[in-house]
Length: 179
Image (tube, rainbow, N blue to C red; front, side, top):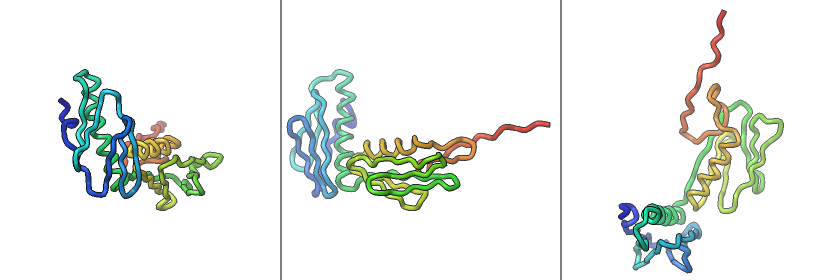
């Protein structure tokens, strides 16, 4: 049996979890999140605890068992605390700003790059070179951060580009000039 899947989830007081038609609905102080359950996985709610069960012991269902429990835990954490990913921009003249529902990045291209903010995600510019991505869904926050980083990933010679805060980029030495 899955070690993670068999653990019982304890729900905080402010959070409400429901199962309707194969959907898990989690509602908390910050908002609502939902997830479609796989067909062989079921969720049982008793009081302030949630347990995840599987119908059979196939390898695929064993893998899903722990995954579904972790996803529900992430949903509970998302509606109580939320998730944040921070990016930093390095390079002379590189900057970011939010206009309406678009993130506008000036990254040394011939034109500014417009990144439309996905629904359910908030993007804030802390400084001109720091971007904070917040939301309730851990996967969507991480995917949005990865898509922004992919616009101009850090290059290995000078380190210019968009990177996660605290990310270490290994630098390469340049071409050696000989006489």
